[in-house]
Length: 128
Image (tube, rainbow, N blue to C red):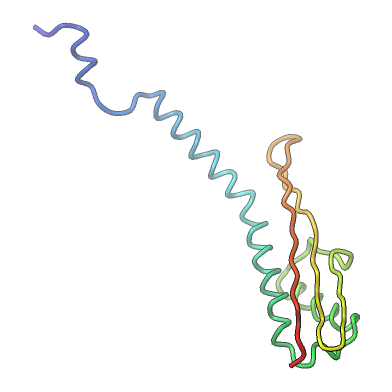
């Protein structure tokens, strides 16, 4: 006959509490991924838009208004809706155009808790 305490030492695996903790951690990261995925995708799309301006012929000869129109058209096509003209700063020199993008994304996490994502990007366009 086995002693009562010896059965506990032979048991292996997770307890119900262990599984509950693992599931809670998994759900937390799944929720975090779900709320941050659109922001990450939007960030990637914005990077592609700015980088695509490097292939634009004669970009350094265009006015700031024309460059903004190119950016705005690309944002419309790619459904980027959270950026405004005020988020961009376009500086022109003789042979270069530098575009600065600076904005904050605020994502609601839970109730009155937000995740703030600061975004800074600059692209230097050189005369082709």
